[in-house]
Amino acid sequence: MRAGGIRARNSWRMGTRKEADYLVMGRIRDPALSSLITSFPIIVGISSGEAREPHVTLYGPFRSRARGDVILDRIREASVGMNSYSGIIGDLIKLKGVRGGAIAISFSPRVDLTGFYRKLVSVLSPVATRCTWIDRDPGHRIFHISLRFNVPFREFDALWKRVSDLPPSMEYKPREGKGQLSPLRTYLQACDSPLTIFRFTVLRRGTIWREFDLPRSLWLSRKEAGDMREWEGTYRKYRIDEGMELHENAQGTSAQQYVISDLHLGHRNIIHYCRRPFVSSEEMDDILTRNWNHLVGPADEVFYLGDLCHGKNSAPASEYLSRLNGRIRIISGNHDEAIPGAVPSLQFHRDTTDLFLIHDPAQAPADFQGWVIHGHMHNNDIRTYPFVNAGTRTINVSAELLDYTPVSLDELCGFLKRIGPEEKILSLKEARTRYSSHSPYTSDQPKNW
Image (cartoon, rainbow, N blue to C red):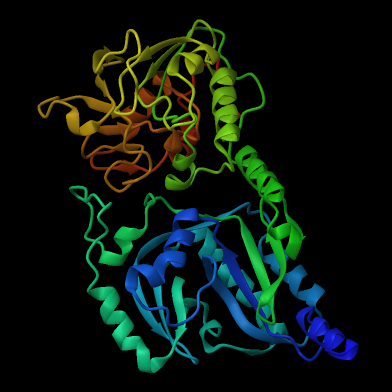
């Protein structure tokens, strides 16, 4: 190829020739979704259409009368004050575009993402000279995560039928009380907690041009967007902002009792399955251990409800226990080795409340009239097992719902006094926000959570 041709090709890739098409997407870093998209042709047996890393299209494709730097400034303007956005994935949907059909997973944006989307439309619409119809009214966008798109119309009906007729995954274990999933959704090996979006990607002429890091409020180049060291910085800033990574001593001046479950130290796969904001099990172990020790003092008592460590690369439980402060009372989990002194369950009365502590809530006595404190469920079925479910009188203290830090029994019992019948509280953070006007913290405990 001649030098002029090479320059022309490169200038096209860099977006310096002709008018550029832009597309704004919410980047979803989720290994389970990536795996499902990659394996889709194998599962279904048809490779029609195109695929891209998990994302939610937010605006475009569009052309702009403004310079590229103006577009970037307006996206930053719409996201001021937020360090992430979230939504909940649903079941399969089929869509039709200009160039073909798409098979996708529905995505229901939560209030934070809906608000950002409306701001995004308001700041980009004045500079857009041409845009897809779907962006003309913010109330009509169909949010989704594409598994396959641009499937030729002549092939689409056959592909949809093959997807609909699939048998469920052999690894899928239906849980009582959970809704029925379409067969293809059973191949998604992940929890059902909200998906978090940490970055927005801007495509120009179909390739990544810039990526906006929400927690750090900075624009990344295409190269930086794929750098794992940059993702470490993204997650670190997010954890600090959300109170998931403690850096100061938060121990009380008098002895406290705490509870937590399911740290899964040394278990890399739990990061993917439960969407934990860590890049490695080593980083996770370090943060979870430091969080524990910043809060729990040597005189404090911790009721640990099982699954301390797991995975072929994890250390023995005794080694992890030696790193953790406090007098630890172990209730055995299904992944635990034999730990000296561990018991299958524990029952006691505290602050006018009967408590039953066990790892798996399904194993609690059916006739127990008090509150069952448990782990095991992680964030896998938060509709049935949120942090607090007053209807079933269960309290899920899996680490994911506690921001990876033990919670005191004083604070927990304070929530139980205020929660209404049949009420649900998704997480410890939600409970603290809901009851912030009458904080349940003890007088000697710091309140800057």
